[in-house]
Length: 460
Image (cartoon, rainbow, N blue to C red; front, side, top):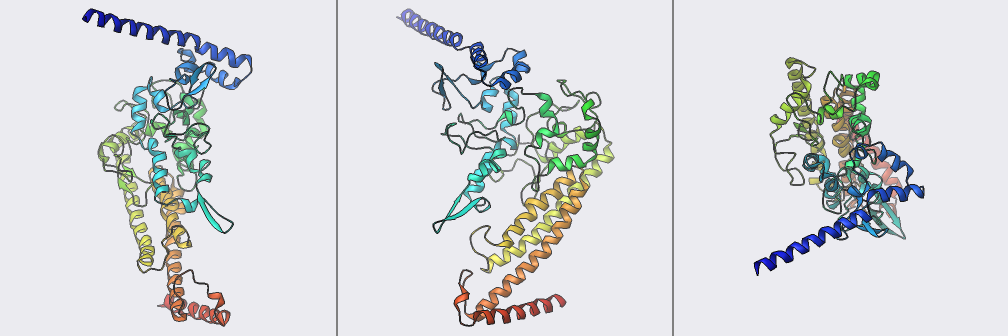
């Protein structure tokens, strides 16, 4: 009986292998190339692939795109099933270490951060808010081409026919198979060039602008100056890619990903970060849960992460140089934390006194305090750690100081307005005072009195 049972299973496995082999032959990658070439479809894709390392190593269309019919993103195509969405998980079949490292990095959490903000209604009022037939409609359509283009979309349970999630190559995209990330965000298809991903221009797809100006800071720095003047002479394609041999100054990938004599290369871009510089208050990157309740990187302490970055710096700089550099940068971050705390207190006291509405981003002072950390504060902190003096000073602390003065003045005016409304017997911030008798005259008088009061307070 056992022999019969074993024989039956052997036959089942044999026929399964025959079917799979037959399918592979019937729908092989050569067929994809021949068909698309014959009809002139996607000539640039074919040309890119032919010049790629994938082609050099025999990795073609099928290995990445042919799908099991049961896959959540499978689409019927020419007698087989394919997936237009090549997920990070798909790449991970071959690039195992890189996939695992990226999955635990902050890059992979991009879409989840976006969803967190949207669920908490921190974002809708920064997006598409319109009034149609008297009804206010808020959605996040605008961010499909904005925030989500970099952060990534959530494709769970959705198809490529859904314009709200596809096309998208955001670094934190949640793929139909559940994996996190889009490798082609940095290694653009279908060339998947290592050289392209190593150059800082690749990172500036997302890391630029008033709120995450790493690109601008890099090009202002001495590192960026050296890259601009001689980077075209460097060896960008060598697998090892060593300082002093292949390049002379660091790029983004050198600091955050490349290896040294003491340090292995990684796709976990968070593994060398000793600070979180993007939230309102900076904190060390110990293995504490972030806003998502997710450990940051691989569980190392912030000191261990700094030691890794120290190894990168030590390829060019002395111990004293590195130690003093970190001391100054740390002190700058601590200074920002104190300055932001002081500014935030101005707004918090208004809210505690019931002088602000419950809705986010419907009053000018809420935009101002948001920019203190999301714009000026990030520029100051990132500039300190990336050798960007102009971003530390004039785009950073100078504007933080100016913001604090404006916040104080705005808060004082809000309190004066509330006092005037109280004297007039008006409650709430939405009351229409224009229908009151003699309103314009009373308003003119109270504005003059308010201005005098502000002037007297400033003198004191």
